[in-house]
Length: 327
Image (cartoon, rainbow, N blue to C red; front, side, top):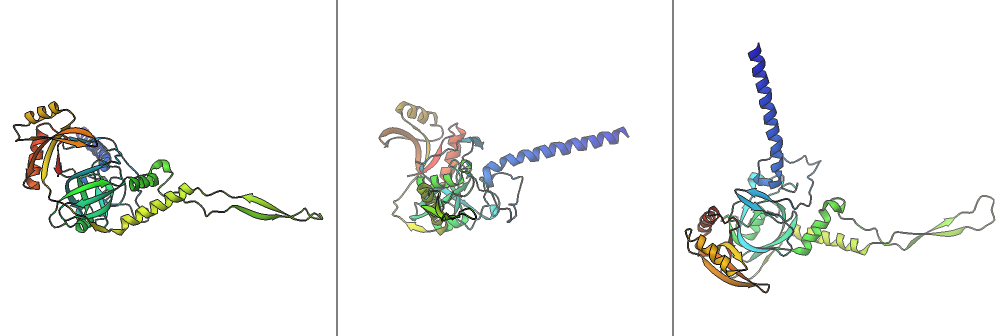
């Protein structure tokens, strides 16, 4: 009898531990489609998905730290990938339902949602995209596009593309203002139609010979800034929904692994020497917005696969900020 009670107690303890572990899995929803979800299906259509504005705290994936932040000067090149069927109808990192047939994207650090322009540097196709998820967490990727976005940009078949990702600051601020919790909800406030005043007739007391008098009641004035914000938010949503592809001129590009960038030349030389066992680096001097930088790079490289292998070696050597650049 005592043994049976002991076994029953052990099973109960095991169930309690399992429940605790499952509740911990819910915290991983921060990373959207790259995490194991505690909830594998989206909420019923009648409930809807609660889209929220989210920046997020620093997090670590595969030994690399990422630091989400508002960056309205963001402009980077790199390798894009795409995701689709395995994540269709599952929740994104900011609580939306991922639709592989809509235009959207995942980014490691930009706020959700943000609006970015993604340009395929191999064919010149350019598309305005809404960022609403976290990823990609393959080290050598700068952005992960929905399947539809990859189709429009012309790289669904090959799987990756050399791209430029530029934040659209005004459009991103508009979405932030629309969805930020401090804004009082998920919809922009819409001002009432303009009216100067409302006139009504005041009736005299019963039996009085005094004529009725008009009474003027002042109406609330329209806030022009609220109207402009509402119109701008609507225009931004229309632009995102249009899935319009534009074409721009592009030039031949090379693929590089950038191990680091420094304002001091001696720091760049030290990193170059430390990575000599990985391969031959180049220390390049560049001027960006009037400031001189010294970049430590490998390349140009022959393929994305070669860049991926080299990047993993550089990260393993302790340079976690290394990334793939297209230039």
